[in-house]
Image 1 (cartoon, helix red, strand yellow):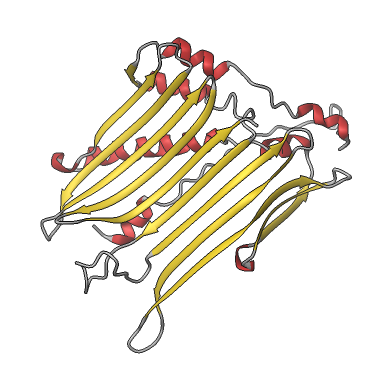
Image 2: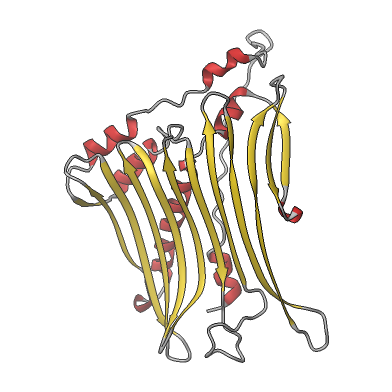
Length: 312
């Protein structure tokens, strides 16, 4: 399969959403950015998600239908603000063996990468700040412009901190990553708005989890319409719950295989797993892999987004 095409298919999923409204000059109410606005910062436990799960998934194991999925998505974000700690791991690996040395799984080729970022962040529910640690591993292989071109290899490990906080006057807020390798530093300063800032303090961000799920379902369904029967995805989409229904796992698994020109088995897998404990998302994971199976199995491509949530 064409490597560039696969990179496009497994690229990062992006969710954008917009809300807004208009006020006339007569009914406009000026909101002074003072401490009174802090009433908007509600981090209390909400029961909507847990109640819906208890009412919907009464069996130990149950297939998820389109109707169930629509209901899940409608309440998935209802308790987003409860968790105040997240460990968020993102991995992007492209590890195709060199075409001149395909039997060596450690050989690399132009454009290969091994990138990961791990953020461990905690929100202070009193000061409305988020802080924590961030670690990056960034390894790349790129042909240089020599004649003949040589494969350059770089490997960088960076560690740093993350901070989201308001100014003392509540006129601006700053969001910044600060690493010991300055190349990865980033900082933005924006005009403070209580509602917008409150949304920034959402550590769960279930809208991103939902987008992983919905986009993958749509893509797999389309591929199963256009692919030959032998190359279609086998799909499993189920909910697993304990007898009390306080712990529910939503798992979507899609897997497809095809034979390569060399006679090996090329396997593509999508796995999305959402675990919910007592009405709060406790963990989520999105995993995409490409594995070439033969005498040895080669992991060619991996995109992973895992998040673990806690109450401190």
